[in-house]
Image (tube, rainbow, N blue to C red; front, side, top):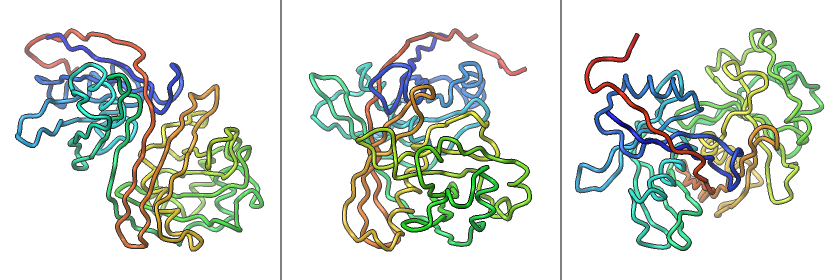
Length: 311
C-alpha cells in the first residue's frame, strides 16, 4: 500500500516559517491505529488524513493527529488540508473564492480558498462559536509567578486576564510588551502552588498589542504545563477563544473587526494570522481565520497491505 503525502508551511509564504503540517490527500484504507502510527513516525506538529466525499453533500472528511493523539480540531491543519487539496488538483478551484467543507471530529468547518492564476494563495476557515468566559482567574501576583515575570509586566489598563473556552479552555493573559511575551517562562512549581490547575485550563495564551511587525495588531504565544519551555506552538486553534476574549471587552462595540496576529520570530518559524470576527454582542460569534500556505515537500509511505504495524 503506497500513500503519498505533502508537507506545507502554514500562515506564511516563505518556506521554513509558519507551522509545519503533513497532509495525506487520499487516506482511504487507513484506520485510526495506522493514522496514529504514521503521525508518530512523521513527528510534525499535526498530520492530516483526508478522505474524499462519499455523500451527495460533497464534504471532505479529515482526521487530524498530533504525534501522541487524535485531535477534534486543528486550525493550522484546516488551512493545510485545504491548500494541499487545491494545489494537487483534488479540489477544483472553480471560483475566485472556492467554498469547501471539511468534516472534522468537532463538526463541519466551512473553508474558502482564494486563487490567483489557478493556484491557491489564501485560505480561510469560518466558525460559529459559543464560549464560556470566566473572570475568576488567579490574581496578578500568581500569574506573574507562573510566567516568571513581575506583576507590573501584566497589562492592567486596557485588558484583563480571562479564562475562555470554546470547547478547549485557555487562560488568556495580556502583557505589556512584545519583549515581555518573548521572555515569559512557564514555572511548573508556581503553577502547582496556584489556583490555576483547579480550573482545568491546560494552556495559557499570552498576547501584547506590541509587535516587531508593523502590520500586526497583536503578538501572541502559547505556554503551559504540556508545552516545552523553548517551544512556540501554533496558535490558530486558539483564535476563536481569543476573538471571544476581545468581544467581551467593554471597549469593543458591535461590528465586524479585522486584525492580524503574529506568532514566533525569525528563529521560531514566524506565523501571520488574519482574523475577522462579527461581534453582535450575542452568545454566538462568527470567527474567520486565514492566511497563506506553501508546499515544501512531497513523500511516500509504503505500508504492508494486511496486518497491524502496532508494536
